[in-house]
Length: 371
Image (cartoon, helix red, strand yellow):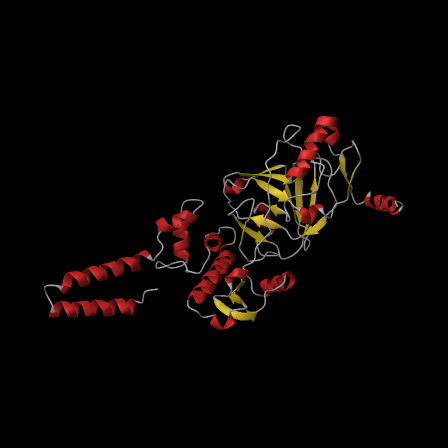
């Protein structure tokens, strides 16, 4: 970073030298000064340079109005965190909260650039209201949830940037769908345990607030499982693959390639962006990259179903996409953290059947009699 005082001092020095050597030095000194000043000016972000983060017109102007006219990104701030910070500071859903989160990120990385955490290289820094308020180890989810209740908008980041939190990658396999393309789509319900508020996602969800972005809600499967399903389809026909309850028509396998359940930002926006959500920005790895993701630090209730029936509620820490991901994100993924908690049976030459809470005891009693 260039110091203004140094520029002024150097300018004075050039003027002095020019007075002493009026023939040879002035043009050289002026050239150097102009180059220095141009470099200084280029460091500031402009509406043009910030336009790369815009999803809709006016966001760059809104961002600069909320920071300062001489704003520049901290050098150490990763690109995906810049995008997350930009989104939070320009957020219309919860302006005060988003601004607090974004400014705390900027404070941390500016301080990191300035070497202010040199004595805390192996620690995490908690920032609240643009102040470092605590040094220590990374919070677990329960501790983070408590901290965010006491200090809304706080962020905790590692001085060692190699320790930034990441989500496990999700792999999306594009496959030929059977039965008019609906055979592995599901409906999803998410409930906030604290007050019972529920959000429902249909098979195909359009986020009307963000340009009708389409998300298809699916249980994702791997290539080997899909190959087996195609062989089964060929042998016994499509009708035998339809489910009886729970998921409706889905692929008869739960070997998903999405470790976590990743849903549209609409879920967080509708249930409230503060309660139960971490302020960590994470970048999608695998499917959806390089979209930003936000993860819950508290459990939410999740249930999946078809047009008529629903599975039982199970608890999971879900993840949501950024509010306006690119075209590379087409799906809301139901991952292993949900499907692993659901009971199902698969008889030879019969459809996969998901069981409701009333059927599970009978299945358990039967399985206990098996040797």
